[in-house]
Length: 452
Image 1 (tube, rainbow, N blue to C red):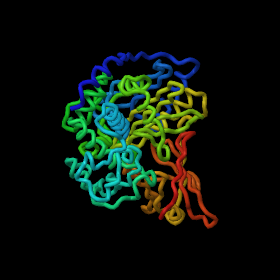
Image 2: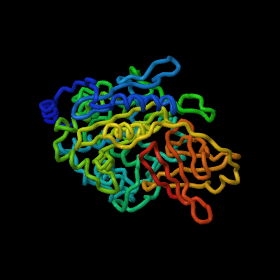
Image 3: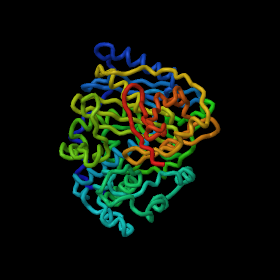
Image 4: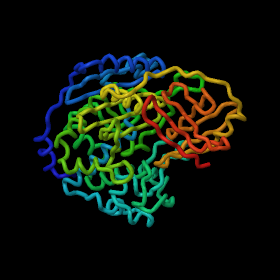
C-alpha cells in the first residue's frame, strides 16, 4: 500500500472547489453559443463543454443527447469516456509514487514487470511515459477484431510482448497505448493496490471528483452517456462495443466536464503534486510529449493538452497555464472530434480567427479519377489512415477504426459527412497524391505523408 504520509499532505493542501457559471467579458458567451449551435445544426455535435478563465467558469453546458433512445439530454454532469485522456491520470499516478519514494521514472520496466522479454531489458518508465520505448501498438487492425472481448492484463500484453520493437528505446517518438497499459501494471506493483483503487484513493477522492472512475461495462454508472456513430446513410447508431478491460490505464477512465475542471484547479496548485513534478510532466522530452501530456504552442501561447477517442466518444482537455485558461470538451459521438470544438472556442476566447461550421457541396467523381488518392497515409506520430475505392466512392479508415466516405467538393478537396474538416490532397507534377492535409475548422492542420 502507498504510505499513509501522502494522505495528510494532500488533505492539508486541498482547497474545496466550487463551480459557478459566469458570463465572459465582451461577446464570448454569445459567440460561443452561436458557434456551438452551428456545430449542432451542421455536424450534429453531441457532448458537454466547459470553458474557464482565471478561476471563473464562463461556459458549462450540455448539447445533444446522452441517450438517444430515452431522449436524455447531455448536461455538465453527464459522464463520458475520456479514452486517451486517461494517460494524463496514469502519468500523475506515476509521479505521485515517485514523490512518495516508491519508484523512480528512470527505473527499468523489468523492476516492476519481471516477466519482460529480452528485447525490453533497456526500457525505462521514462520511455513508457514519453512514448519512446519502441514497444509496438496493440490497438491496431488485428485488435479491432477482438476489441469486444473481456481480456486479462496478461492476455492484452500478450498481443504485443513477443513482437519486435519498432525502434531502439529512446531513439524516437511513437504514440503507444501499449506503453501506458504497462504503466498501469507498474502502478499496481509499486503501490500494492489495483489501478482503479489507486486512482480513486489518491486522485479522485482527494479532489472530490465524485463523478469520475474507471469504466467497467457491468457497473451501474449514473448519468453515463451512450456512445454513438453514424452509418453510411447518416443515421445514428450505437457505437461498436469495446470491453474496457482492454483499455485499462491507457483509456479506461470516465468523467464529467465539472470533475475535469477540478483536476485543472488542482494542477494550478500543489494540491496533488509539488511544482517540481508538475514541471517535469509538462516538459516535452521527445517531439511534443511530456509525461502524459502534449506540450504545444497555439495562438502563440503555451498549451498543455491531451485528446482521446474511443468507440462512440471523443475528448479534449486543453490548458493554457500562463493565461489560466481551461477548455474541456467531452463528446459521445466518434465522428466529431472534440479537439476542433475546443480549438475554436479557444479562438473565440482569445480573439483569434475561427469559422462557423459550413455545409459542404458534393460534386460527382468517377472511380478512375479517384484512383490517384488510394493508399496509406501516415502522420509524424506513426498513426496511419487507409484510403480505398468502393465503386465510385473513396473510403477512409481512420485511426479510430471508423470507416467513412471522402466526398469530393473539388478535384483535390474532400469532406466527410458530419465532420467539420476538409481533406486536401497535395499532388506531384504527374498528378499523383503525395500528402494529405487534414484541416479542421479554420485552424489546426495535420499532414499525412503517403507511404503506399
